[in-house]
Image (cartoon, rainbow, N blue to C red; front, side):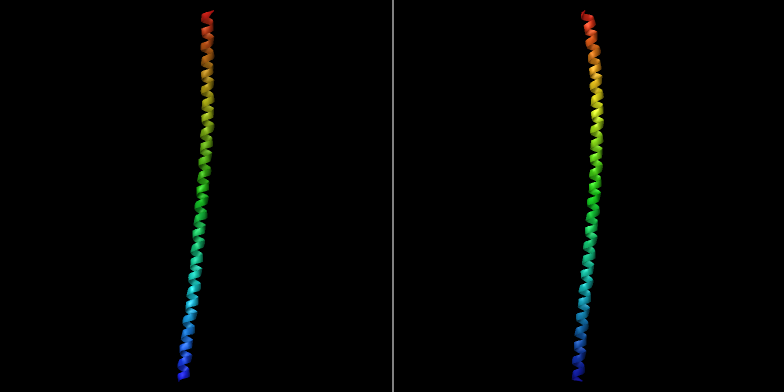
Length: 94
């Protein structure tokens, strides 16, 4: 009977040990999966930020081109007015 009790206790200890190892494996797998999810979210956020920065850069480039065109037009307009005024002044002084 004593041997039977010892075998029973040993079997119970082995079962608890196996359960503990199984729990540890499951916890490790859950932690790894959570880490993978975090990594994927960080990658997605980084990609979204990069795309936004690309959009901002494209918008700034377009605004700079538009401003350059408007500045050229304004310069041309001022130059034309100056030439018209300068020509008018020359006619009046002769």
